[in-house]
Image 1 (cartoon, rainbow, N blue to C red):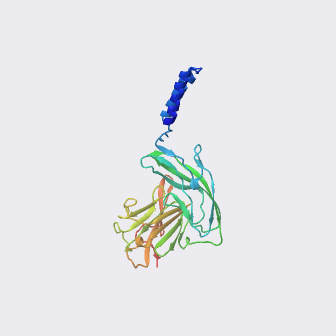
Image 2 (image 1 turned 135 degrees about the horizontal axis):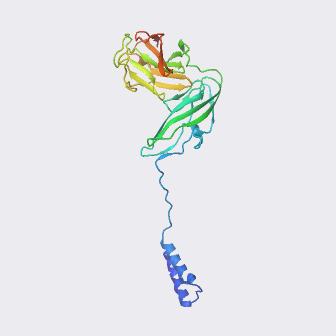
Image 3 (image 1 turned 90 degrees about the vertical axis):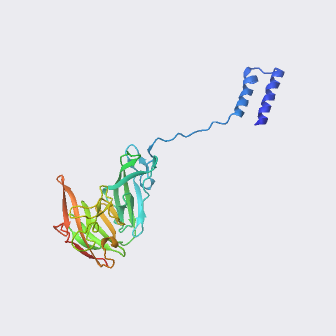
Length: 313
């Protein structure tokens, strides 16, 4: 760079001495421009910061979403009976101090393959149990970033399940077959899985001590919050319970099309470590004519001493 400057100065002096310049630009301005150009750093581009908000929202499996319609492109999903399947969830860039965004998921039409559920409120996964083609439209709603509501997004999921046979650990022993609900259960080594098919809202009450009365903050209830997330509570008396989450729990709730699967550790269902039996009852609640009605199983009662006794050995 220094050599270029010296050469430019020499050229300037020589042109003056020889009086060979024809124009002011050649004789005077050009050398100055060379000097200035050499001495100044090149301009750098600076990228402006994004304003707080939600950007680049995609659908499941990275499908493009049309921001004009809030609908993501439909996707084809290949699976096989007996093999685990999980969809890559929606992504987005939440520009905020926490960089976190939240949402909920529900099925608004169609159905998933048996064995595929919405789990933990946001994930779509499971092990397909039956071959066939299944189409469902899911909606991600309550999308929030920076405490701002960004509405919802819909997407059609097209499942194509191949393979032979039926992997069926979800129909177990049937307890109820009613116009309101079908309820069955499956006992595994450490858990009991309750499979409830209903268009209403199910919940399970457990007599943990199996003494026929409610023991405050010992006996339990498993139901759903408004967004179909697990609600684990301790019972206080016949009409009261703790808030959702008031009972520490490792239970899981999976949601399908009118299908709810509660998977509950045996250790939460009984206080007796070597117990071979648990006592449970079910409530199926639905909104009718502007009010809520509840049907109890075993039939016709909400009395705490009326239970299904299930062998868990």
